[in-house]
Amino acid sequence: MLSCLEYMYHGLGLVRDFNINPIMLKRWLLNVQGNDKDNPFHNFRHSFSVTQMMHGLVYLCEIQERLAPIESLILITSAICHDLDHP
Ligand SMILES: [Zn+2]
Picture 1 (cartoon, rainbow, N blue to C red):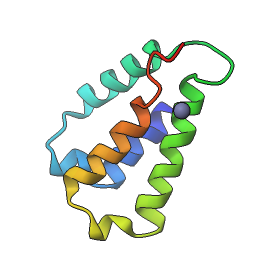
Picture 2: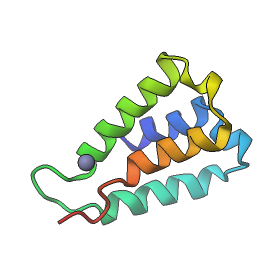
Picture 3: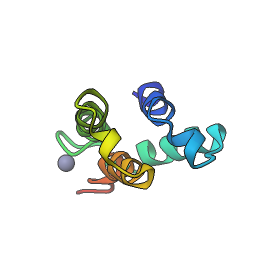
């Protein structure tokens, strides 16, 4: 899941556009994973699933062409973090 999330950031050009250090991206994703609760639904797998759907909407539906790069960054990052630390 972490590799796929990294791929999404690279594939959408977010690492390039925002000059994101790839090592920092990896550490940040590990940190998010470590702070998601280990419960039956609102866990990291759910966060990944939502992010995968968001990536599909942005990439496969070509929404990115109509978005500013910052909006793509916000959508993907918000999807990953939307339930962070949810009880
Ligand atoms: Zn959720």
